[in-house]
Amino acid sequence: MCCCVEIDACRAALRVLPNRSQFFQYESVTLSCGPLGGSAGWRVKRNTSTNINEPCGRTNTTPCVISELYPFDTGVYWCESAAGECSNAVNITVIGGHSGSPEPPEPPESLFTRVLLPVVGLALVVLVSVVLLCLWGRRKDMGDSGETFYSTLQPVKNQTGSIDGLSPGGSQSVSGSGSSGVWY
View 1 (cartoon, rainbow, N blue to C red):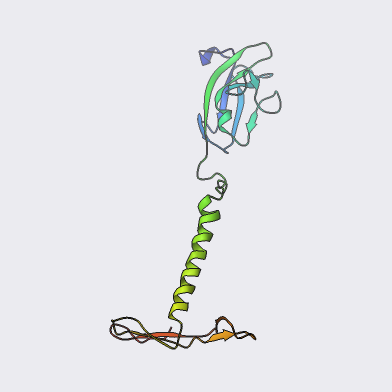
View 2: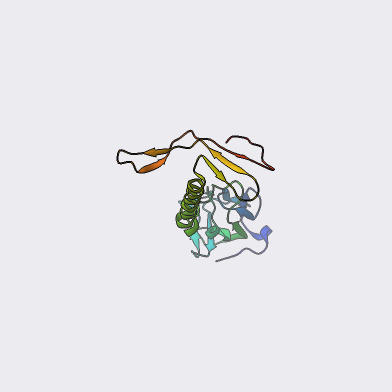
């Protein structure tokens, strides 16, 4: 890489638009070789972590437009003539991600969401079913507290006489000390 130390001694200067050296990922930048006594035939080149002395952009002409910057675009940029003369060099840094970037991909399903959550949900359904089955009946004393559980749930029997479940639309109530007697 050649380098022009004093910009006044250079025949061309690298121009960066927008005029800054730090960018966020997905932003765009335009790099051009501006005239300082004529810059025809100059092209933008760069050294990045992936390429050395690489022409910037798809063509060897100026300007070089990078429509989406990525962290691997971080590096040193300069203008170079066909004769090997160079302009000032500019360090450009690209920082990954910002609020205007596309949404990050969804995280992969974890063991919790794929296996444990459905198991916990099933366990809760079984627990509620067992509790309701234990409380099923027309009237059941609920211990020494004086509360009584009432239910209109009726067993649903099949043709063989065995119980298949409870009929829908049943309601329950608790009466006794400290209860409201409200039907559920």
